[in-house]
Length: 493
Image (cartoon, rainbow, N blue to C red; front, side):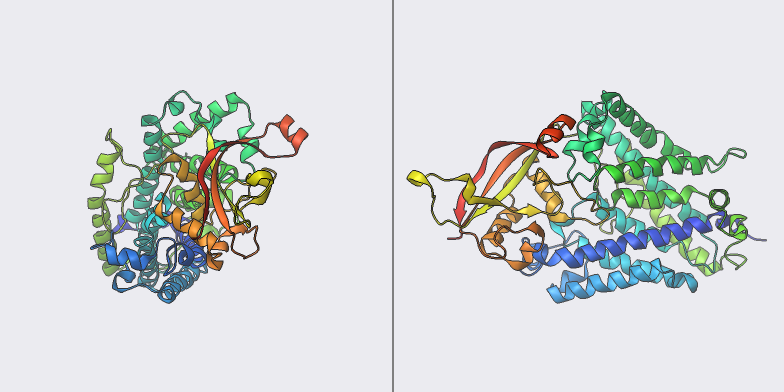
């Protein structure tokens, strides 16, 4: 008698390929982002040096290989190793062996990235960091091509998408009034942290369209996630249709903004609800033997693999209690982890929408003392530092960066929303006065070509998208108005 015949989800072979390769591809992007940005932000001479954190903290928020000491060289080894492991899964190499091979490779990738996140402080404090960690752990349990996908892990991915989408929907309903009166997206495209090339066009769409956007968002996040758990009703692939709705709404967010890999990984995870037969109906190039559930030539999963996966599934089930309670709580937490391993987390974003966009603009001057007639400071003497992603030049079209994550640019958006004077920002200004080469490489434009400015200052501007008539008249994408001076001119001394 086959006691575990239910365990093998033979109709989800394609879903497994999409999940493992897709999550690994985004992990590869995350490791490359770390290699490019971690050292100037958090390295030995960074804005928030990890060695200082290790001296101060009696306990890190979770496990990390840097617990026993940090060096920039060690960071490079960890991130490069993680990138190589992730790339191997993208290529499908571990999946060719026994199921324990991709398990070990993806768990190692998870532990390496978890090590980085747990010392990343505010620069790694975003919800998609813990989402990537949880996804890596979960898809590691999907096994290899030698065994069918485990049903309990496919369901675990459905549960992850449910928490991701339904949690975000509940945060909005419980949050700002703009989500309930359907006006949120009349502001969001303009005020989101890092607009993309099409954000202005989306913002300029008529009000009725924005109301329809919000209504569609509520349906996609508050109703559709339940339907993932209903794979079929007769001949209708309900789960696949639910997945398609989630994917389409995420694709709209991808083309209208830059949210690192948040939307991209949601698209990948949502594919878990699409069975192979539906994939074959949509893409006939997929072999019919896979579409018929004939993948994984091994007849059934071996007992040892069933025991390993069921043990891990039981762990995920136990850890699900607090996130489940959080979903129905009036004090719902957003982007919270309830354990030190970042497994089975709570998700959600944009419970309220900012109505006005305030940008922090950093400028430098080569003059030691105020110049001009009568010693009056002239604006012509001051030159802006240009950032790669955040708005600055009013003529420039915002670039598409996601799924790559520009961490400095994102944190600049948060400055006017909370404490304007953060320790990392003070250190950032100091590094500009020192003309620190590593810090300057984080920027798109250094007005002093690597030379140190005499002084820097910080100003706040109100930015809004130019209307079509304003664009025709001035040829600018943004209109901006000076709000005031945040920090008066300061010199290194």
